[in-house]
Image 1: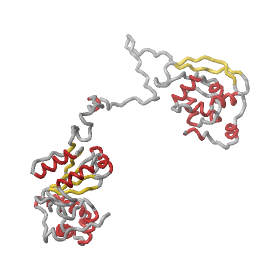
Image 2: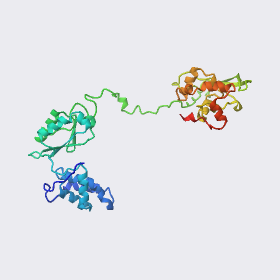
Image 3: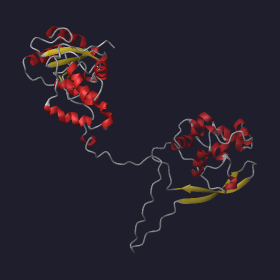
Image 4: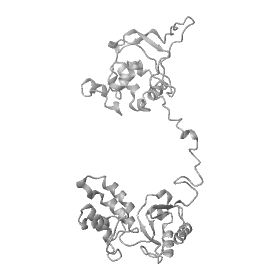
Length: 369
């Protein structure tokens, strides 16, 4: 940062805050404990700058130091460090022209030429004392580049012509209206927005709670009969016994459950695999399939999937359904669950199942992928 020195001669010998500023001073000092009043030095310097025609003289800095019981040098250090504080006289209307990249790309260099032509060199004050200017770093209005700040107001979306008109108005005491100098409101598109125009987007009617996918739905209340008693609900599950081979090849009968009411959410594609109800001793350890850990095994059991043979018999449509339902598209094919299940269903082993059986894998580490 360049060396910054304050003007010792232009500021005179005295400075006093305006009476109406005392309330603001009390407000800022009131934010800090009695033994931490020095923390108010920046807002106090800012108020002093406003009351001193837009710049900080040496007497103004001394007044701030005296009020906060600070050494003068400490206040000087703050004032010379922050470029928001100006250390030499400025015009009644001081123009800060942003020269950072977005504004530069949008024509700030041309705006500098206007300032040089209409005002003069940087920090030069016109003879009538009305105008001065300087180039500053980003002022945070990049979307409306190029822009300038005049005292406390932003003038945005400028061209050399529009900036020239603004400077001429300020010279002649005519009010210049801040904000975008093109046909738009704030940072909205020129000519008004062409999207997000539906009033329902802004009246709160769309801020309703919506059902999350895969959540269980509440059972409907039974409708009363003519006699005023609830009608008996129709059974939702039917069972039938079907033959099933275990790992040893022995055929046993198991109870197969067909669920009428419980179905996958509408967004799930494919075909749900057939589910069964089987005694616990007939369950296979599905965690012997790489990619199935405790959580996935529990989820499959809830779907009525308990054996390697069931997974081995899945069709592509079944695979799509399970992947959609359990929210891991492509995983079953990628980890080759079906080939593993076919091998294990016939009493064979896989490299992964051997590691599981040997106690080297407590559960499938891929379960959380």
